[in-house]
Length: 507
Image (cartoon, rainbow, N blue to C red; front, side, top):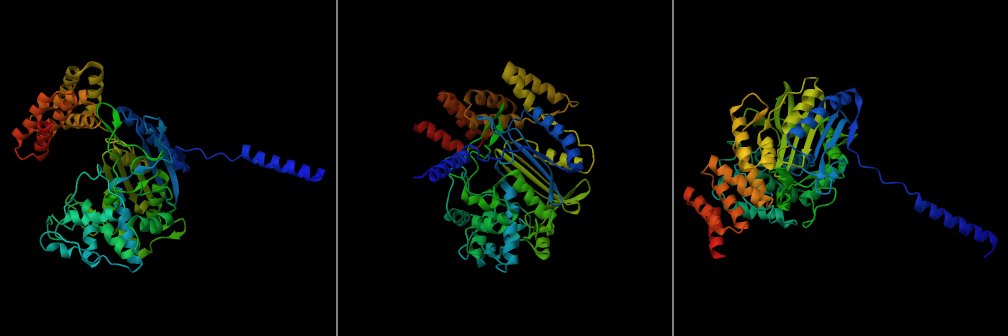
């Protein structure tokens, strides 16, 4: 090797060595984006409002708020932790389970297939699922539109414990057809309104059959990808939670993890989508863009109007479009949808006439997403955000942790008598606290809280059974047996009480 070759080799080595030590760093996760004068106004009013509400509700879990105007995000902010135990903050990369806010995505998928000429709203579902059957005859008349308007008559839930025993693979949704065979319709299709998760899960099979693609794959290719919603997913590994995904939390006497994570492929169409704050802002901009996002036409005018057009009344005086609820707030029309699975809350508003969308996502129950989305609306439209009341469960929990159940009980009774402060008292909140503690295996506290609730309401089979579970796990089988027997004294046909008592006696 001559001197020129040696110098060249040294330079090459130095170049590659330099590349290794000066790589471009990964972009830092963001928790706040505020743009425009309106965005600054929202930040100055809404952010302290939310921080105060979270403090009063003892909430350290994650919260994400996104507000768009036209084709721009004007306010996006995250609060708290996606994972409290590891102190992983919620940020723009955090993936939230959005529960029933998945339904408008399913509706959009159906309308996309209509736009492609592959089905129509009036098609009976047996056209695509000839083996679909229920008890009776009326099921043959169920149309795609009936399901999207929640007028199919299919019961709300036809299977249970699917979070505990999640199913995977394309055959998972097909299992919904087996589950529904043992049920009758609640009413003749089209005659009444009744919200049904199970109907939407069957609709996912229609999408698969009409498109020739597995439901989540079709949604990804034809809805998520055109919107650049690249961080939105249906699939989750069964035995682990990806690092960027928010953990579910609830509230016992503190914010605590809830188990299980709400996941099964059976429920993809009704509640299976997971998404990030920025992706959901893109979803909002599709609607403020009247079917167009970032120059990409996803729905033409005819089919976009089909998606959000109100078709019939709901029992509470609003209207229903294709999955979207059509109502108003602050005398302004909105389309909206809520999503709640234990551990997660999502609420989505679109103000079509003002080109505004608002999304609020949380990974804890009792996160007050409804008050927050309304407060955001109030601030956007330059009104003073309304004051709020707070559940008395939070001062009750504080008193219990510091002074014990007697002090907490006295405080509860005093707050019940006082109608002048911000706290509202609902005895069922104590039952909920006990149930969350039992779920988290905090057996001693669950026993105390549930025992206290049973002095308020002696007729709750649910409370007595959970109290029995707490005693059983504290190795007090005598009291556990007495609690299970109490459930059957209240209701001799209470199946879960029978199972618990038989299992205890057998073991």
